[in-house]
Length: 114
Length: 118
Image 1 (cartoon, rainbow over the protein chains, first blue to last red):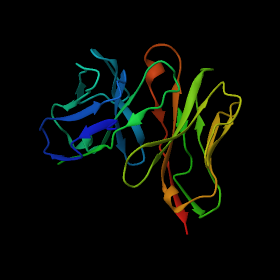
Image 2: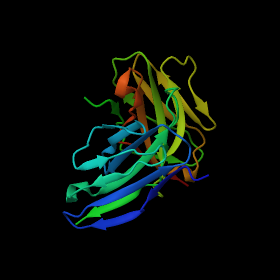
Image 3: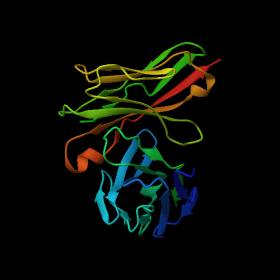
């Protein structure tokens, strides 16, 4: 009954460091996405994927890379972290098909860039 | 222009009373869906309720109901008989159903922080 699993839960980076936020889902969902949540800004879409091998940019993609080699995993890479990337990151997944399909979220990763 | 507007940064309600959280949206499409999510202080995002643009009835899920006024482009969340556990941030979101990439994106408002007082 895992759903969407994100690791790590917390991370502190120094400016310029790189890291990968992991996201895995066990519901065989085609669609996966990454959001960032900043105070007073709601959730903003970074990147999304509609299936293995297919990714596209969202609203705020700069500074982030993604890839989707399997249905289950959708990692988010920060190549050179900046303080502006301090945020809470959420991964989400849902089945495609019916547009009303509910999007399920992971528990989030709280990232601080010093 | 913002696609989703939640004009109430914070709301207070007494336990056992009803509360309405406002949401207005902007779209030129006829086909779309509206979602409400709850985010308690623990941080997870919890789906509450869905309303489709062609649904004739207002959606209801237990104590949650959606006051959908299509002509006014509003989709207000009504919580009846508030409980202390309802204290949380509430987000309204919209998915437009036009073809291609837009079909897949869920756009969120900035949220309303609800506090339920005993």
